[in-house]
Image (cartoon, rainbow, N blue to C red; front, side):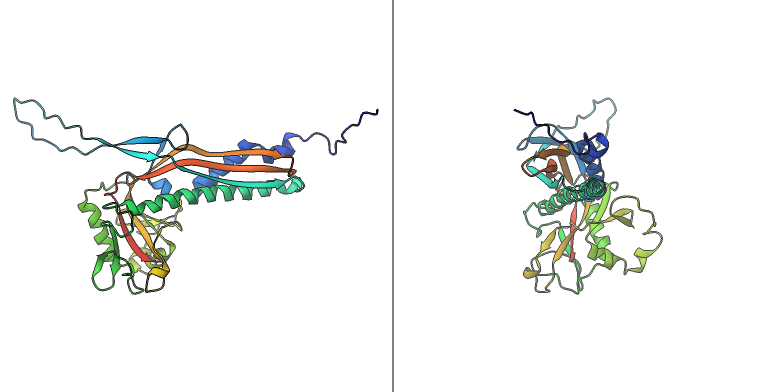
Length: 316
């Protein structure tokens, strides 16, 4: 019986040819694209942990103390320990997978890899931001609805007004005084002045750019500082995100358009607990004569301080 020898075509595949499928290369590029695509996730508290899906982590939520007058000859007053915990369930596991047939020309693999890693990073980042924006329903009195005590809109007649179903019309547009009134609500709630931000949908950016005050050099620096950042209003950084939540569907609004929830928030409003950062894996699938590429992420989100943010509902 004659021994058969498998015909090697092109010799042994070396690292130069196989580099497009080395997991470390994919992982680095996905992480870079992921970080570049995040908006809201870069503006909230982040915590890392180890474990598995379904685990719960308890994040301390300290209560502010108060200064006490010191009387001569007396002992100091000890602040009471009233700290609580906010449980965050690690229940969100999302993946992005591609199957790339090895018949694809090697010369094209580098450009394909760059497209797929960029697309994977963007898709995962968009999901994280979307999950964070959905927490707006837990603000204020935590009504699990965008109709809550922290939700407002700019009424054309009365100014900043509590949001309710089917109330926003096409005439109710963003105004400078409405934004100042929303800031005052944050001030009245004793939210720290630092680490505040305003995250808006693209439609509100368009409206803002129509107000003369906001296109001055005080608002637009012309420098791309952070992801989505377009300027600063009254000391508050403004960011644009396409992931702002839909607070009212077009079919539920007699004006006929979607209503989106812009967020005026503090860094401690939401928490993103990442149990596993973006992970990339590749595996050859002989039955498909292709390489399977998967990027995935495991995390949880929660409203940490729901009284430190407010919603401005605007026409999308």
